[in-house]
Image 1 (cartoon, rainbow, N blue to C red):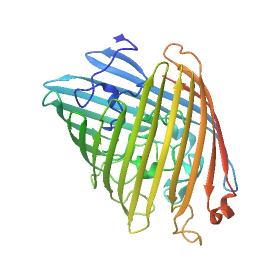
Image 2 (image 1 turned 90 degrees about the vertical axis):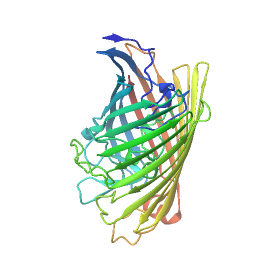
Image 3 (image 1 turned 45 degrees about the vertical axis):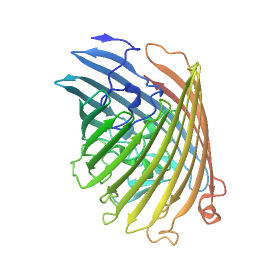
Length: 393
């Protein structure tokens, strides 16, 4: 085994720098940083990456709660030559299930269930232990073009921008975005098959996958079922820019609404700038969920992170979401869409690296802007904050 922190891997899907590739088969700007430890073993080029957050969470207002918990992710990926192409694998695990099935408090967050009966409201569900177990194969057609295939159980279909924990603009913010279920909630899907074609700076990929979101048993593998589909077009005009637009049809995604399907449309732009002693990345994204039957809702996200001297990171996020799941059936406020705006500002101080590990201390503050109707339930201008410690590889 040979280990070299600065060694680079070949890209999984085409003849371009590996830094273009993000979660699943998604792209990001090539200038984006790729943190992790590279090494070789038995002919494989490998990279390990991961983090652990220890968090104290205070969500204010009438519906707010406090909780101390941990989120984590460990990823191992590798590739090698196999015949005329490149064979790869991606494995990603999380110990998030240890926080309990109810996840952590997060005002105005909705989606999924904690017991198969009651929905999670004002809480973020934990990620599954198995976040991604995928194999890939790419076949070069020319210097500029290639075909590739991806199969994951679980995996991430060709739908939306890179998942939030893989975007540099989001990865130092321990909170999941409120727009998660409009943009990238399919990043853990039990059963994904994707085919793609790359020509130069363009990529088109399409997937069939299981539409149902993971259930409350977060330690288990679930059975694949290919009842949904998606397609995505991505364009990277320069090393600093990445654009994508995608459409997906999700068959019965919510366990508590088995007769409701969703048509999802997303579009996003990511700008990354690598400069002396620092990096700056900004993501803008829009997602629309058309429920069949049900309400049509939109979400907008603008987030940014600035790191300098590998020591100081400032991050921010603004979201506008139309929430229609804040109240359970039978409540007079149920069945309606409510506008929620959230602004977050945070900072992380990182200590010098030690044996490929880096310790950071940080905090974030959020304020929510809501209608007077919601103020009666949540309080006026509900605010929240997080204090956290982070160790990353």
